[in-house]
Every structure is written in C-alpha cells, then in structure tokens.
Image (cartoon, rainbow, N blue to C red):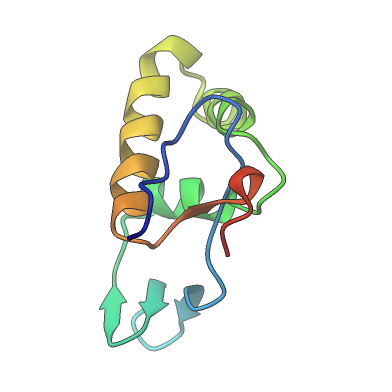
Length: 101
C-alpha cells in the first residue's frame, strides 16, 4: 500500500517521470500529460507546476509566486499547499525529499 505524500513547507515537489508539462502549439496553452490523461491547467497552476523541479521547497515556491504576483505570502501559502496536496494525492506531484519518483 502506498503511503500518502504530505506536502509541507520543506517538501521539494516535483513532477514524476511519467508526468510531463508541455506547451501545446495548436491550442496555445500548457498541457499536463500523464498516462492515459491530458489535463489543461490554468495559468496559475502552470506557474506552480513549472516551479516543481524537485529542488525548490514549497516555501520557496510560495515566496517566488508571492514576488511574481506582488501578493503577501500568507495569502497564497494555503492555496499553493492545497493545490500541491491535491495533485500529490492524484500522483501527479511527488516529494523528492521523501525519495519518491
């Protein structure tokens, strides 16, 4: 049985090797490709997913987004964490600090 990955401030989220974020030239938008699925994330979701490189922590991602969107970190921390947790629960994001690939 798989243990649930919990997204925490020190977590280092990444896309697993079977998930790919790719720009669709025809539709002029980003697509997330996973086995037998294609998802069309919105602009903010793409900004979060692009930062999931397995090195940046959740806190660093929040800080970076707060800077880019000129928003207080406290206001976006919960949204980013919730987003990453939902995607981790779907196995579309993994935590590199927990050696999940």
